Length: 102
Length: 401
Image (cartoon, rainbow over all chains, first blue to last red; front, side, top):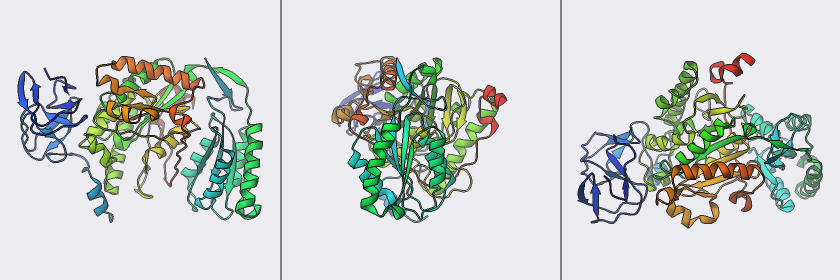
């Protein structure tokens, strides 16, 4: 079972969704084990449910939502620093302002 | 009970708004001054900024001018732009609505047109009458859109809207969901819900079109705020957005300005046809709201995680907040707090029921929060569409056509 601050949306998922702010060092109960949160995690963000390998598909809602571009340990925050789209790359405000010519 | 405005074409409206439309950016200031001076919640400024002709923009403008929530129109033209101002006025008059046309170059300039416009709006408002009749749920058209999505949107507000949609569709209403560029990755599951195999193929094709279009543009339909809210990829955003559509069978596909032929759940294909041109399909959420209105939506369910504040006088926008932190921070801008689901204070079913009930209350005349705040965002840009194919319509509507 996941702790109250992390919810599992589908039994096939390998990430959990944060429903209340998590502080670095906080004990995170994940599937019966307890892991110390390596960093702060904000509401709506994802946390690894299991150890994830580089290149592994990330599953949420029971469906693939992208791939890992670096390995991450159980309990780690999963976001743009270690994961990418399998469709169209995600942009941020910096990359968006740099690529003004097609 | 919904006491509606019965229009000459038999359609029923839940508001009686006068639209003031500028036909080129050069007439925008004059039109805005007219609306500001009148300062009435049921007078909305709309317009098209371009000087060059565009069939799509003309179609959308006519669809909005003859929307059942619109009672009449004042058109403000500079005079030299391409827009067929006489054609628009004639279409509004032919629909049984009052319409007045002001041409700045003929009226004598800015001051004279503003004065004439204020008087024209008052005349059109007085003439914008319609018999009040009872309206059933099965006559309602409800759109949905998400904006400022975050990692909570797909867990709370979007599936709650899906529950409300399921109930509305079961009771015969017409429901519209959209933004095929934000359904990339969902085409397979979506096609499985199509009422015919032909429609299933059309659904896959229109999502592939969207993916290609956005690829050419260089960016997916994804804003930096989505990432700050925990969404990492377009397909992750899509999965969350998709849940707004609920679980009903998908009856058909419509394009901007098309009226769904009968009740049921429809996908609105908002991405242009042909070679990508004119830029991004929908440059902001407001463009999608305008297209939902042009498809006859009486009101729109807008889910947001980061917190959007936009609205419309023509077709009320009901704001459903997904994120409990945003719901507290922007509480005066939200109609429904679906973030309660995340904090264990309400179930998905309870919030779905609340949205359903709110739809009926707003249809019966209660003002949304964005209406009370006077929100009237509107944007219409250049686009090009081919007509929908026969496979996009429900079978019964196809044989009747």
